[in-house]
Each structure stands twice: as C-alpha cells, then as structure tokens.
Length: 403
Image (cartoon, rainbow, N blue to C red; front, top):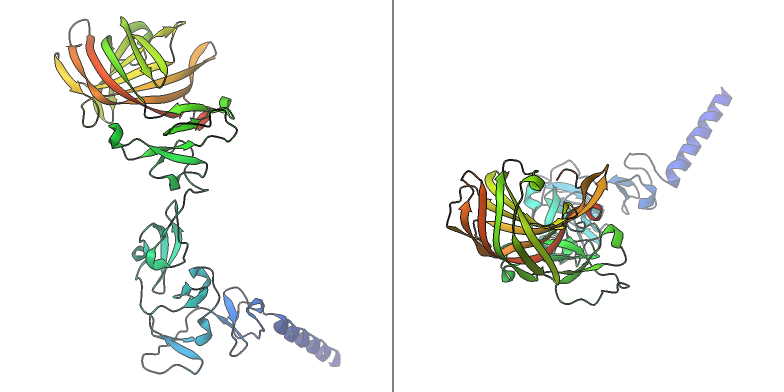
C-alpha cells in the first residue's frame, strides 16, 4: 500500500509541475505566467494569472451589474473580462470575437457594424464575415489591400500590381489586376472602340534590344522568342480597300476547294504588309446568331499564307445594301495570323494570333450570294486597328487543335 501511495504522490507532483510550466490542454483556469503557457485561442489573465478562452461569457448584464474585473459589452449585453480588451493584434482575426484591431490593440466597437456576412461586402471587399457584430475582412478584391486595418473604409489601398494577379494575356480592367511584370493595355473610345477592358501584356526585359519603345508599345514574346521580345505596335491603323468575291458554302472547312479568285488587295498595318487574292464564305452561327463568314487569304506553297482576314455579316443581307463597321455597326472584321506545323503529313495550326479588329468603315453588298452560283461580292473600305492578342499556342499554353 505504501508503494501505491508513493506512485500516486509522484504522479500528482509531476502533474502540478506540468501545469505550472505551461498549460497545453483545452481547459480554462489553468495557472499561467504568460499567454505562451496557454492553449491556442486562450490568453493569460494578468488579473488572476489563469488561462481564459477569448469567447464571450454567457451571462447577461442587462438586469445585473458585472463583476469587479468585468465590463458590460454593448453589442451583446453580456459580461466579459476587462483584460479581453487591449490584447495585442496585427489583424481583426487576432482579437476575441466581436472586437476590432485598432492601433495594434483589440478594442470593442461602440455599435454593431453588421447582422450578416453580406453586410460586410463593402468597397473593394471580396470576402468578409460578420463576427459578433463586427466586420472582419478575409479577402480584398484583386489589386486592393486593407493596409490601415480599418474596416470602415474597406480595402482602400490600390496596389500597383498583384503577385497573384491575372496571367499574361488575360482580360483586365486595370494595371493593378495584372501580375507585377505585366501591364493592362486597353482599347478605348478615343481609338474608335467601345470596349473598356484590356489585356495583361508583359513588360520589356531590361536586356531586350527593343526596350526603347514609343507610347502604347509593349513586348510580346512567344516561347521561341524568350529574351528577344518582338515589338507590338498597338493601336496603329490601316485601311483594307477593294472588291472581294467568295463562294458561299455550308461547310466552313472547304476553303481550299471552294475559294474564289479576285484582284489582289493590300493591307499595310504596323509596318507590315499583307496581300489577299482569294475568298471563301460559309453559313455559320456566331453568338447564337446566323451569319455569313467571309475569309480573305492568299496561297503560299499550297497552304494559306499566315495572314487571314475574317469578316462577319448578317445572314439576311440583300444586294446593293451598305453595312457599317465599328461601334454600333451591323458587321465586324478582324485580322489573324497563323503559324503552321506539319503533323503526320497534315498541316496543323501551331499558333494563332488576333492582330487587328475593325473600328470603322463600310461594305457595299454588290451580290448577296442567293443566286445559283452562290457567289457573294463585296466592295469594302475598312479601317483596322492593330491589337496583338494570342488565342492559342505555346505562348498561352493552349492547344489550337479544337479551333
């Protein structure tokens, strides 16, 4: 019996030493010297030197006064320990439920800020919670930061860029949305385009031989050109003028057999010159609307040359009709460039870029293609604006197979 009593005494002795050294079990009122001795989400009270949870106490102070070391919290009308106030903090989440982090200390607000999480989604705030009547920001909108840790003005700091921002060539609204080595370049109304979004384009490398660019020019690098970026002459314009002929087919893949020949048309855009002398047209659906798509190209060694013009017209056009292009126009056009590769002796598109879009001009429908020979003839005068954007290929890590 004496041996058993000795064991019990030793166990009790080590248990007391363990609690004095630091409490690491999820119970309250364990003795402590600092908050480091307490379990997570507990702190060491300087009043009674015991560990306490930061959760609110459960009794009301509306009908009775709080204890000597307690205060009545106005938001929930419950008693809390006075030393729940003033705890050190870096963000709201360091504070007990229902408190704000102000000047690096936890404080109780004078009045309730919210009833539900949705009340906290204020200016530039993407994700927030309502915690005991206090709004706590979990995530700011892309490109913003809650720098002053003050919810009342939301996420007020506009960042110049974002390390976790949009990838290159993604659609953007502002520079602060793009990754930090890219800039949001926009088409805008001064250039005749009713479009308020842009693309995140990479900035020129300091070692790039083409680094001294004029205004509105950026670097665009393909995988094969890393380190030697080529110049993107954005916002330059060129005119496409001439008469084109094309045979309308039901299959948009038969351009090689059904294309029609016409007089050569020249387009000069951004210092580059393209030529077109063949046309192909087909019926298709675009944005849930039936259209006639007309493609202009030139043959280079049995394959279309890299430059292609695509024109979209309403399906119900009539002869001698004039169609407008640009803002509010009935028709549109764009220039594309394609890089081919031979796979199993078949031409395969390796890379596809949109180089320009129509911003003004018109087309006169001389023949709408409704007769027996199905030839559509158009007299065109189009203003194209250069805006290089890759659609597929190594540069955007997207295959062109399904185009």
